[in-house]
Image 1 (cartoon, one colour):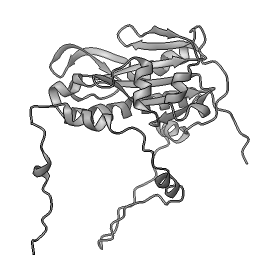
Image 2 (image 1 turned 180 degrees about the vertical axis):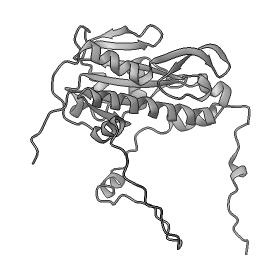
Image 3 (image 1 turned 90 degrees about the vertical axis):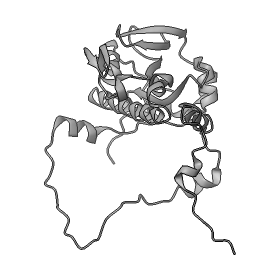
Image 4 (image 1 turned 60 degrees about the vertical axis):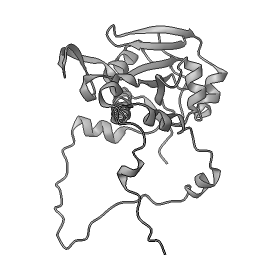
Length: 266
């Protein structure tokens, strides 16, 4: 009888080492929302898992943390699923963009002499992300889809309009964010990171998107706005709607922002 051996890590490295993008591209294109209703049903009743080590050593109990402004913001952040149809100020939008991915100073970033530092860390100072937004209810901003020009700290109109049936079909959460003033789309230009870091550059891109999303959420919280981070969208539909090929550039995260509906405390 043949003894079964475990598959070794190196045995699955079948893509040539010099090919820095095919592996992540294959994963990205094949990770559309999972149409498995049984799995979703089973996940309705579950307990969050925590890890604890009982190894005979007494744990070191940490003192209470200082009640800093940052901690207050973190504690106040909530996922908002009900919005008021209320406009956001242009200044408020400006703050959201500046906090999310804005330039903080100019200088030498990694090996780039005249690079721009941003509000988030970026592997190699390459900043692979772009921000697009649907502005539906912002003072002094006509409804439309815009690109954030980071160096000009400005919005570039790409498509006028505040409501699109194609977009509603692409966003799983479309019904509950219909009154959100803003919907953000974080896209990745994959080659910016992967030309240097290869397959691992894809990980760095996703990490960076998380940094930007958290900045947006905290800036929104500071302004009394609600936010909802959304990974639930149909990649193919959304990329086509926004005009991306889904290969060289694609959406990797989306967020809704607006004034939350306030419910009286029960």
